[in-house]
Every structure is written in structure tokens, then in C-alpha cells.
Length: 72
Image (cartoon, rainbow, N blue to C red):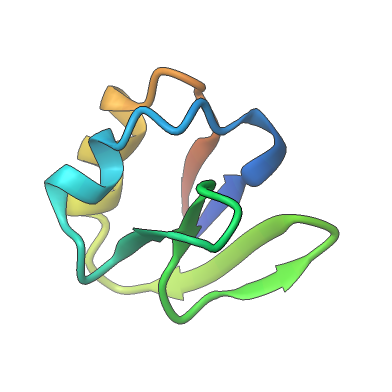
């Protein structure tokens, strides 16, 4: 199991994550990226996943460096 964190305060709204997979990432009403299915605490989205490949690609392409993948 791996943990993916998206720190929304650092989001530059570039849209790279959404372009990579809009079933996993989308924009919220405030035009900041969000992790679909994640829990939010203090403007930080966090989700546990089995397959990290798409999340790692999003992390590598994020201009705001707001996506972090921690493989347990």
C-alpha cells in the first residue's frame, strides 16, 4: 500500500495531473487540483492506493511540486 498526498496550497493549477488521468485527479470549485476519493484535512488530500504508477507520473510532472507519493 502507498500513500499519495496532494498539498492544495502549493497547486499552480497547471492541469498536468488532470491531463494524465482525470479519473484520479480533477479540479475543485476553487480551481485547485484534488485527488478523487481522498480524504481532506486542512487543504491536504490524502489517499492510500495499491498502484502508484499514474500518481508517480503526476508527481514528476507537477509544476507546483504539490503531489507526493510514499511507497510503504
